[in-house]
Length: 143
Image (cartoon, rainbow, N blue to C red; front, side, top):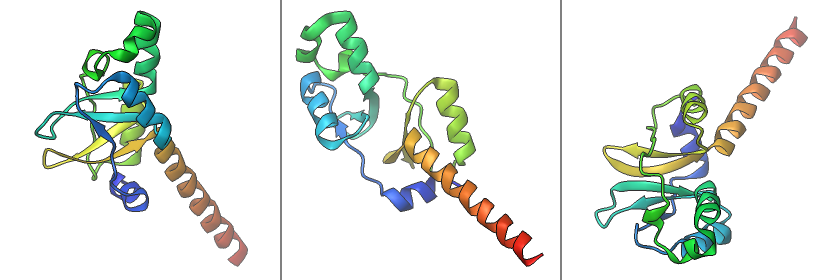
C-alpha cells in the first residue's frame, strides 16, 4: 500500500502557518482542530519547517510561558522529512522510526500535497492485516 491510498481516504487537507505566526495562535490551531502538527510555509507556500505538539512542549520547557508570545520560526523543526504519494507504507514506517517523527508532509512536484501521521499509517496497517486475515480464513474455509 502507498501514501496515495491514505490520501485518497483522508484527503489532502493540511493546516499551515507562516514562520512569523505566534506560538500561542498555533497551539490554539492545533487544539481547535485536534491535530498534532502544522507545516510552516513561507509567502510562496514553500515548506520551511514543521511545528508539532512536541516542539511546543520543548519550547515551554526551555523558555517557559514566554515562549508562547514568540514566533513559530523560533521553535519549528527546520529539517523537514517529507514523502511522496508513491512511497510505500513500509517506507513511511522506516522514516518515522529513524527520524523519531510522527508527521510526514507529502510533496508532489515541489508542492505540499497532504500530510500523513503515524495514526494514519497504523490505521492502514491494521486494515491490511484484517484483509489478509479474512482472505486466509476464506481460503481455509473453502478447503
